[in-house]
Figure 1 (cartoon, rainbow, N blue to C red):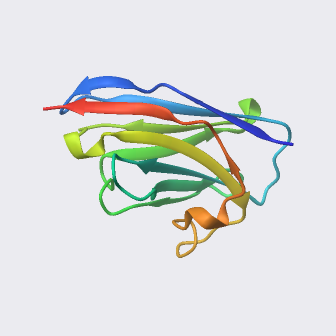
Figure 2: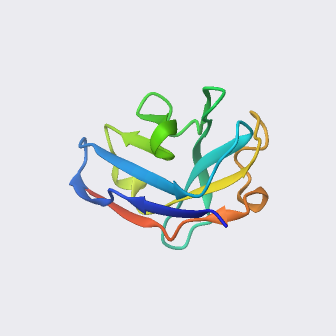
Length: 126
């Protein structure tokens, strides 16, 4: 059973940067899709970004395009979320998740992901 462990969260001021990591134990395949989601207080979980590591395909929510990037180190089974120009509205618990395959329409649906990490908190102050 694959397990996902996030790290890298913290508190930053608006305009700052953070890099989140998601390390996966166990094997992955060329069809594995890794997604980042976030859930702020009183809000629903929303998709932030996703990547098909072996295919190099990436997807982003409109709210983070141009500010966040997603990348992978296949050898380390780790996916990264580089967050720049952070805003107070980016404050949330960030989760990584895994599913088989994703495309430009379904990557954003959290119900389709079957493996989740425990989350890492990101707090952005103004």
